[in-house]
Image 1: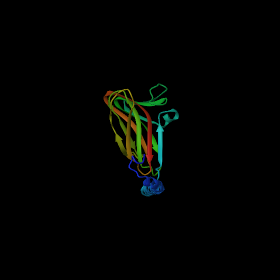
Image 2: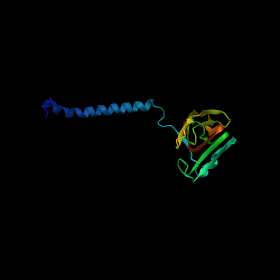
Image 3: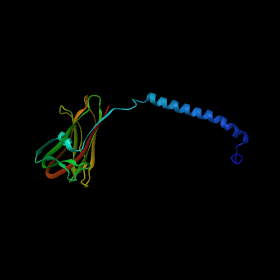
Image 4: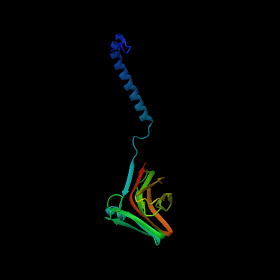
Length: 193
């Protein structure tokens, strides 16, 4: 067999002696590369804080609702309309606006944040997700056009929180003569230091 591969019998007896040296060299190289990666990488892991609110049970009490004109905001429980669980929120307006929002507070040092909410539009419409500071400063908003396909759409926004990372996240719709209705579910806010 060794003759057909072009290996002389002399080289086959030398190979086992070289294998331990090769293995040692490979392991040494692997260890050096791993240690170098650790030395130049930032902290081994970041602290992550999150809030989830899917309109379930007592979570409903943390939602703040407001509306203007003929706008309305409310909740549904046990109707089979939620994306997950038993509860969901809803917003409706034809000549006005409606919003539901919740506070997310993570303390100092948590700066890179993402808010996500699932939205099920009844009509094609523009929906807005906003983030505010406690002082009333709008940090960011996104206003995607949502197509009514009969399912929930993920809407998300990312921002850099101010010093104490306490923010109000709100979902809002507005209408000027045309009926607009959405269901909301599964808000999550994640901040990383």
